[in-house]
Image (cartoon, rainbow, N blue to C red; front, side, top):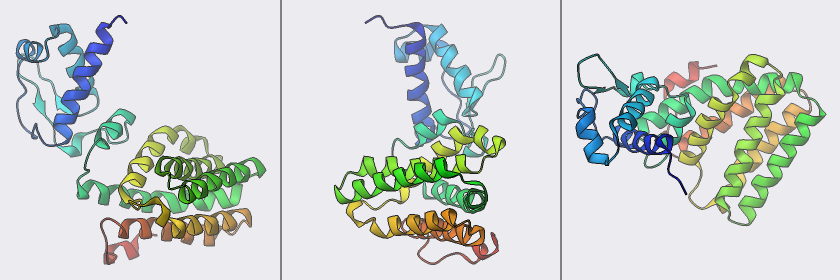
Length: 243
């Protein structure tokens, strides 16, 4: 198989991104020059330059003319970028990142559930039921990937059920963020996820019956209970004020 310039550049991009995200290349550090990186990775300067430009576009590094590229802190990363979220999930994720992600879900998802309860049609409800079936199957067969697939499909169906074009436009990024969250908070033994499935069934029932307030509260409970599995044994007081 012919290896293209693009695939070589992509490989360099991914390797540097992982080194940045998992702390091997610290914020503020100056990266080696293009020639040095080309020698280190045994690739052309063009491949290195392309890789650096991609990393800069995603906020991982800063490029300045006639200066070496520097590593950016997490606050500058494009955290809703699908590639960034994918790289971030390839290893142990910092608990602070998990907490910030759960806060984002807590602000966002209860409102999605509310809109879904108000706007869901028969097609949306069928998609949610199919997703619940996958979650149950994964739980019963101890198939983690199947459970995760169903969990993500349920939340994607919720998003579609809002019938809000702006929310749908955010769908891919939001789905990637939720997938990262699920992987950090799901039980290691997927057979122990029956309680989570029951929570999703109650949410589905609230949406099916167009009980908007109940859907909001149920989604809030789902997010808070997921957070307890990884980061909050006792819910921080400030989250009582996130409505």
